[in-house]
Image 1 (spheres, chains in turn red, brown):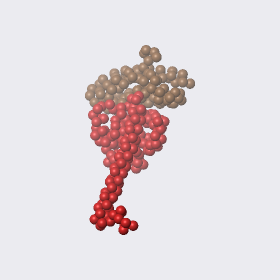
Image 2 (image 1 turned 120 degrees about the horizontal axis):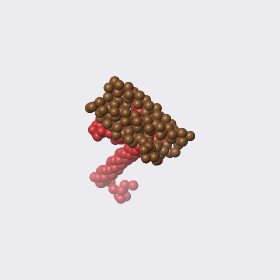
Image 3 (image 1 turned 30 degrees about the horizontal axis):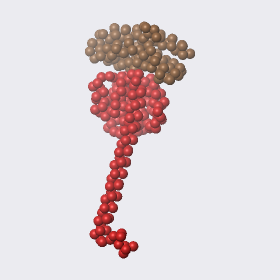
Image 4 (image 1 turned 135 degrees about the vertical axis):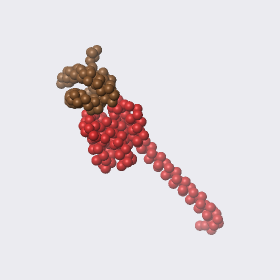
Length: 173
Length: 116
């Protein structure tokens, strides 16, 4: 399935995992993919305004003092709350997953053979949600607009009646 | 598939859509990753730095999954759990993991030769 997406950051201290995910996403979507090995590198580039970030939890195998994914998530949400953040991690403890959702992650996917497909499905669902939000806003705007026109018509009708003006009155022409 | 094989390339074949060059590349990356990880873990075991042992072992988990090395995962999980409690079991766990990884590397090397 090909769908137009924008910019995505892949943040993982495992270079091979980043590359495999990049290969998979490139084959499914049209988007600009940037990879980072630490959350700090990701944050340094946050003003590139990615639409999505796929973030690992443990990020300290390359730099031992690198911040973990939840700390990076908090910072991302503070700086750019509209970015959708997905976690893709080998960490399978439920408490970690719950914490990521609590701090604003859209979803948490455990790394295994099906994780690439699940990330793909998450991105498709996010895209659908964004479209639905736009449609909801458009629908709301259209409703208010039509209600406004109807109200204006009613007000005008009342005003004309008060003023004794009638379209059926020959004197009107 | 032989009964006592430790690796399984089903996932990799599906992921690479039959692209032999991609498969060879991913397997070779696994060789490098596994070799680096084993060396680092041995070093950290000598220092009794269980935290770093667990951290490096954790990184091997998804790679082993992609290569179909299912028997490695429970050992890696035990190493990760032990890093925060009884680190003394880690050396033996590592020896078991090392044996599995070495067998997997032999099997995968044969597969790479078959891919041409």
